[in-house]
Length: 267
Image (tube, rainbow, N blue to C red):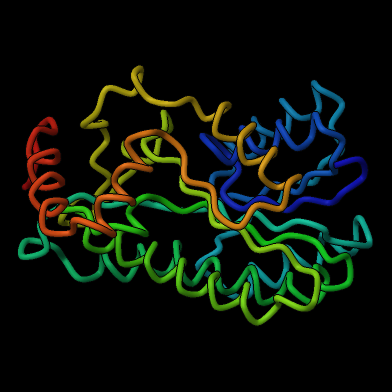
């Protein structure tokens, strides 16, 4: 990663922040983006403390103009772009029949269209460097999860987009990877949208039992170096993908029963 230029969306906390530190320690120059200026500044301070060359940009990936600007400023500052990590994302938790449809639009705008916009403006530069486009997805992109219609739909859409892009670029030297961390200790469940569009504020799961954001980042760094096609983390995640392919009816029941056990489950 020596002197590679890496743009990471949603890098103000959780997996995005851990990715910035991991790739930076490996020698890359890092561009971090996010909507929260306070968190963005905190991540920038942590990068500075480790002498990691970086650029912090306030940007909302759901806005096409912001995505165009963050790529433009990256090129102005560093002259190239080697790796785009589409990490920015938001979740939701509510039964569809009770859900305000604006929630699905918001989730799609960030998770799916954010990936599309960022990739659109980054791709001409990544083609020059024969670099990488990475999507931080979820097991929800392989298997629909009850109470997460909007989130699952956005990740399925991300998978379809990146899989198609990978195929289109097969002979042009660009690496496209979909990384699915499984349940990870981060703030995504705290900021997940409830049926009315408000952040639920409290995680329904025991975060202490989950894979850490740092471990996820290190695995993604290793997979990027090896230019892997797909990365599914956690035994539970791999088992879910396998069962959903070969025993889909059984998986329906297993997934439903699993999510019924969540704290204050809407299912």
